[in-house]
Image (tube, rainbow, N blue to C red; front, side):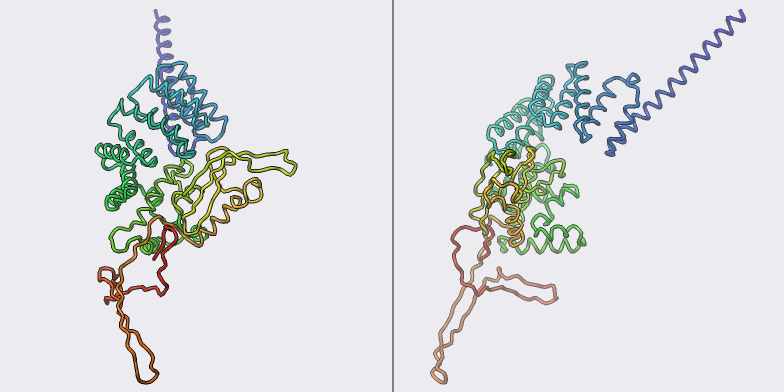
Length: 483
């Protein structure tokens, strides 16, 4: 009896020790998992990947570890890691074929690998499994819309629009869906439809930045400047500091050499220069609204829509094509082609790449540019002069021409500067005595509303700049023609 009791006591003790060790191991594992999440949030993805590999998958449901692994490895910027990410999500799909989340995550990994067609299949499957989840619709829209924005393929724009319409049939009150639809319709020139979509989105979320930006762009295209300013002001007020800087900085319209130094100037110097820059370019000084500034906001919005990527923080004017769009506006003519751009001396080596040709025939300085996608990744840059020897010389020199124009003419506007009314009266007096010369007495009359009063010195002083050059009617409507 004593032996049995002793054996029982030993068994109980062993069980308690095992349970204690299990609790310790479980606590340590959960602590590791928390560290993985912290490292991922901080962007230390390589450390997160090493740590999660040390966790025993058997201690947690496979969805916990594999899902995290897939997300972490997708964000590592190398081919092998993204292959691993796809493998993890495929494993989850095999085990849980009716869970739409795993199809969506696999599609995101495939998009990171530039496997757009494979991603579309996963997103459509996710929509079948959960038709009211807007995430797969929006990702599918982005695939089609980006092809339209970069390449101007009308068929892709139609597919993007039909994708969002399908979402809105399932979820009529989707602000994201309505905003995306309005953006696409606006740049396609469907301003009436875009305005309707944006106003529906605004009714759902009046403070959303993206919706107010779209409405500002639409109202600018309709030349309703007061409404345009109201929407842009509301959007800028709600933006974070980085996004607001992308719209308000003049870095993107300064001469290239000055733009490189501009971020290092004192904040008060930059603010003063920005104020004076837009004040002197106001298209109509008689109004309180600076129409040229609104045009700039609209160009920045369009450049961000077309060329903004996660790599450049969504700031489209940081790209070569985006910077040209912001400085010069939309080109008068655009043409896209797949052409031979480089031949080696013996013609054994030939490069063939997509090229965009933009022409500005009505600009103040007429010019043309070529943008070359050398690596077939939708990153269009200026050709290399001499190397891209199959392009005409005028296009090989695109970089040189752009630098010269952006230095000589900081920006070009599609808005004509207002001519102010000036009344001129004169009388001729003939002097009979002396030299018998004739004198003319000239009276210049300017409406008082058109005179700017400078009170900075403490005294009111009216200033009016009068040009002595003859007023010649321009041959064409030149952007930013100051008369």
